[in-house]
Amino acid sequence: MSKRAEIEIIKAGLQTTVQDLGRVGSRHLGIAQSGALDRPSFQLANYLVGNAAHAAGVEIVVGPVQIRFHSKCWFALTGADFDARLNGERVAPAWRVLASAGDLLSLSGTRYESRCYLALSGGIDVPEVLGACATDLPARFGGYQGRALRAGDFLSLGNGRQFDKSMGVLQRTWTPEIRAIAGPEYTQFSEASRSSFWRQAWKVSHQSNRMGFRLQGHALQRVITSELLSHAVLPGVVQVPPNGQPIVLLADAQTTGGYPRIATVIEADLWKVAQTPIGTSFCFEQCSLATALDAQEKWRKEFARFDWLQHAK
Image (tube, rainbow, N blue to C red; front, side, top):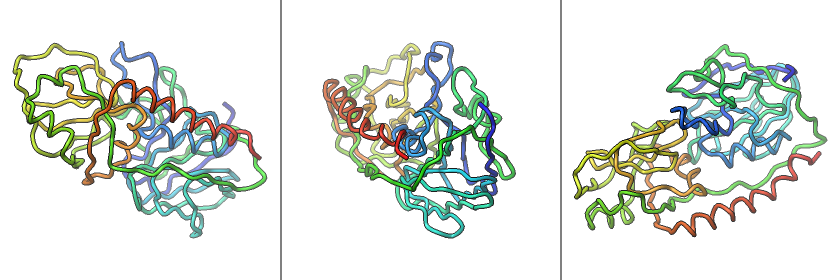
């Protein structure tokens, strides 16, 4: 990819990383998926600036973040509203905006939800590692030097499209109901714990990260106490360690585990887990596999209506 422009990180915030849609086909090697935790928001940002869905962008978790543009560039912000300002002027979420050389983009902090995605026309030009540009923080590879961004970093951009005007779309709204299907070890928990899992509100612990969200609530009790053999796990799997407090695995999670799997968050709702702010609660809503597949197909069709953005001028 030829280099067209650069952006400079003035303030990096906390755990601001270069991401794409993650790695496919490497889990058998012990390689995590990585990539944007809220995949629909990430894809929408790319579509707004004419990129392919998988083009590398930036995931922002905690502000303040400041980015200096060193040449003219179209950009879009999706996901959480971080009260973004371009040279002090408000930038609305899910809008395509033109920045000029010298402009300063500032993101102070989230007003709702928890993750913001920045896409830039042409995408961020970083090397692919194992087929993706995503940052794998635990393994320290991919993205920009395998780490979170720091003040003073310069990111090169690819050759992007030019547009005639700004434009925007409506984003989905986060709600605290997250659908899940019963997991392989669901029946190994007491009847009271199974009921509690679906009925209570689970609070996201401050010990959460991109590997998994640790939840706080009434502890779940497993009635079968025999040890489990290690088994494959994926983003969305809900594990229950010995303390009875569930963990929802996310994109940077390990590929195998030995904790019982009480449930799995359906793919159509996994973005809602990722956008739940630390200290906020949500509830699991039980659904069937058929419902999970229908929900994913429904969302695929809904999201297809944004395809035209890649070609709009």
